[in-house]
Amino acid sequence: MEEGLKINVKLTENDLMDFALGKAFPTIWKKISFVISLIVMLFSFLAIFLIMFLSADGIEGLFSFPHAISLISIIITIFSIVVLSPVINPLITYINLISNYRKSNLLRKLQCYELLNDKINAFSDNSSNTLYLSDIYRINEYKKCFVIYTSRYKICIIPRRCFRSKDELDKFINICIYNIDNKKLKLKKYGLFISQPDYAETQVSNQIVEDNIQKGSDDDTLIDISYSFNIKEVRKMFLNIYYKSIIGKITTLIGIGLVSLFVIIAVNQSYNPIVVLILGLIFVLMPPISTYNFANKNFKTDAVMKKARNYKFKENGFICTYQNGESFVKWDELVKAEEVKSAILLYGTKRTAHIIPKRIFDDRKEELNLLRKIIKEKVKNAKIKSSEDSIK
Image 1 (cartoon, rainbow, N blue to C red):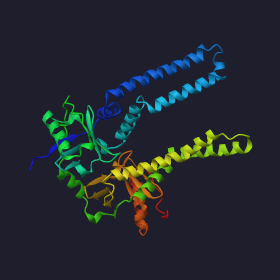
Image 2 (cartoon, rainbow, N blue to C red; image 1 turned 90 degrees about the horizontal axis):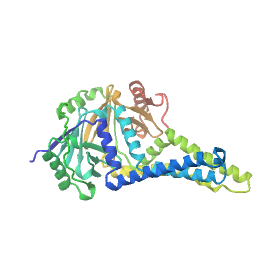
Image 3 (cartoon, one colour; image 1 turned 90 degrees about the vertical axis):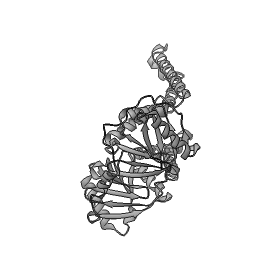
Image 4 (cartoon, rainbow, N blue to C red; image 1 turned 30 degrees about the horizontal axis):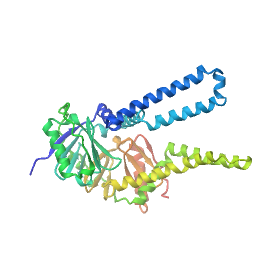
């Protein structure tokens, strides 16, 4: 049997910048649009300057018709360009990635990817997981990295620098071409510009993983649960998370306020400000609709989410085991923990979490309270109900 290809990856902040830029500017047309956006923005700011300081009426005339209309139009144009153009998108992507990276110990650990003809084995010193090539959602190649999408919204980044030779790079590409549906591949076949593999790191071995996971026997397991997700449950949990977030609360309040303002004006005035109503409905309805669609797409494209899993909670951490692998997470490695109406969320990174449905504890109230107590004691940033709270 042909030996698999092993690649060590320890992500750096430069790797994340390369990914953000590669995603934002994958083609020459994206780069051209970036330049055009910059030019349009500069002209827009110049127009505002001219209106404000070169107008015959001075700054006071700025708010009179038609100057006010012109200024509002320019501001709306600039806002639209900033939000929709590639000028700001890569910056937002990079900031989110860096924030996530700096807060999560798990993202900074060395990962070893072993590519075989039908699967990818990924392991670090605390986890061992298998991703079958048939379950891969998509693979994108950028100039300085490969991105493996395990679902529409979950990725693994493999920097090009991590390949030790061009032969190793070609072997990786050939494994992808011959074993993955071409519709899932977006390969450019760039060369190996620079090779800086993570030699300095100790090679991760499966034995290290097994030692970490098995160092606590079943005798010290405090809570043992097994479950699988369904699509309705995932939708409900994502909506719970949205409405509990600060953005969700503020957006909903703004929408309700605008709808209330429309009602007040319509009752007391002789005209109906329909624009106010439309904006209010957009703020109230669009975010939950988007969240609902996000949950559907995430569940549909994530093969791992559909599979049954088992959690063993211990004093020093918890073990997650499912069909494709297992991982051991220490409590102090969690970025945060949060309890919403339908679930407890244990965040290994800023944006990914172990989701523990509270329905599992319908007849196990004492275990739920014990789990709450452990989390409040062990996790620094924990927003969990008190252990005395009853299950609703």
